[in-house]
Structure formats: structure tokens, C-alpha cells
Length: 192
Ligand SMILES: Cc1ncc(COP(=O)(O)O)c(C=O)c1O
View 1 (cartoon, rainbow, N blue to C red):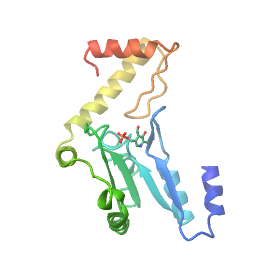
View 2 (cartoon, rainbow, N blue to C red):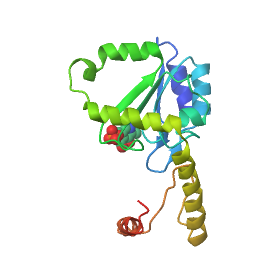
View 3 (cartoon, rainbow, N blue to C red):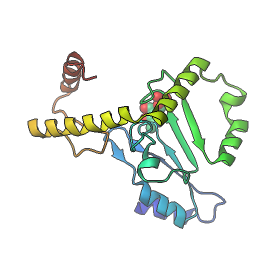
């Protein structure tokens, strides 16, 4: 945060400042401290962009990502995410945010002008996944329950888990072959 503040101070003479961060960092499951980041953005008149690829659909009470977790819905200029992770899609992603920026991206984004976009059925499946999330919280509640259960049991059995970061649990293994053995075991037990 100290370095971010230094950079924001150094960029004060620029017309725009944009802070870009992951919502959740994939390797350790760290959640970005969005409250502190947003406070700095306010202080130094910067916009914020969050990549919610690892958080959309799983973090926050209704799966609204770190934006929901930190109660920042409507405050973040730009949010990106993938349809390929929690939403179960094969490919593709989305960008959302302030309407002026979305409008500008509609004019400038390559998939709108030059490149092929994602196939319509993938887009339809993505829309359906969003619809399901907004209509019913059963899957979210189950995920939160399962995570708490998994963490408790693993911590009771062996201290190989780092402190849990909400829906993300980092497991550390002592040898390179262990993770694949563990994966096979989980698959057999239908945990994955
Ligand atoms: C932070 C982040 N954003 C976006 C992506 C892209 O995800 P996908 O390949 O599902 O579109 C990844 C992939 O792992 C990622 O780690």
C-alpha cells in the first residue's frame, strides 16, 4: 500500500490515474485489500480496475466478487472477469463498470469491431449463469459451508493449510508429486 501511495503521488501531474488489481490473487488466494485501495483512489483521484476472474461467482455473499465483499458495488470504474472459472463456461469473459467507460469500450474493443467474439451459445450460457446467481443463493451458501468444513477438517487432520482466505484455501505440499496424488484422491472421492 505504501508503494501504491508513492506511485499515486508521483502520478498527480497526469490527467488520469488508474489502479489495476486482481480481486483475488490465484496462487495464494490472497484477497486484495480493496478498502485500503479504494481509500487511496479517493485520496489521489484515481480510477480503479479490478480483475474479478478469481473472485466473481465465489467471493461475497451472493458471489459478487471482492466488489461485493468490500461493499463497493457501483463505486469501481472497471471490472473484468472470465466466464471460464466459477461460471463454468468454456471460454470468454466480460467487462463491466461505469457506463461512460463501457460505452467507450463498445466503440473501441476489438471483439466489437475487428476480431471474432465468443460464440453466441457461450455468451448465452454465461448470461444464464449470472441469472442463476442472482436468483438463488443456495450454491453460494453451500460453497461457504463446504469451505468452512474443509478447512476445519484439514486443520484438525494436519496443519498443511494456510489460514483460509474466505472461499479460497491454499494447500501446501512437501514434495512435487504430492499435489497430483492428492488430486487423484479427491477425484476418486468425487470432491472435484
Ligand atoms: C487474473 C486472471 N485473469 C484472467 C485470467 C483468464 O482466465 P481465462 O483463461 O479463463 O479467460 C486468468 C487465468 O488464469 C487470470 O489468472
